Image (cartoon, rainbow, N blue to C red; front, side, top):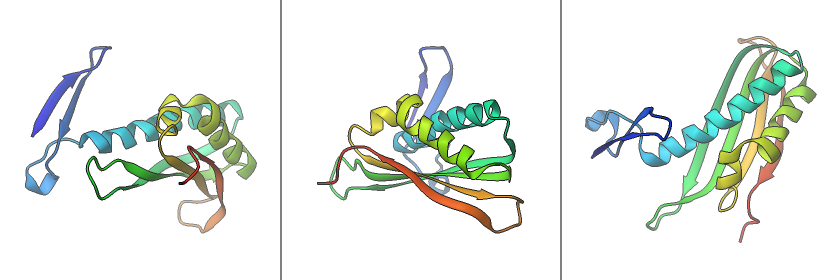
Length: 145
């Protein structure tokens, strides 16, 4: 099933429940929620890193989530990993991720009301080099229970 929508600002958004190998042509609604989280925090972190005059060569975000077995299959945990390559300070990365997770990203704030979100980063000086720093920065959301 495919649904085409138009955002309040007039941009088209498509959703699909089929996987690509089954003829799907768009992300599922829940995948779109995770993509929105990634985009929201990436925009924050990239902006903060620019203000800190950090030289980022490559920036990617990986977002993974676990869901419950029963319907509705809501997220039970989410991990957001910021993957940064460049000659940047680990402290600048850590603080940028922390600021996004705890104060700036509204998508994170909304999701954190119902699910724990772990925010971490992996920093590499060069694309083919080993990680020079990795850290869980903060966990937002309700206490497990």
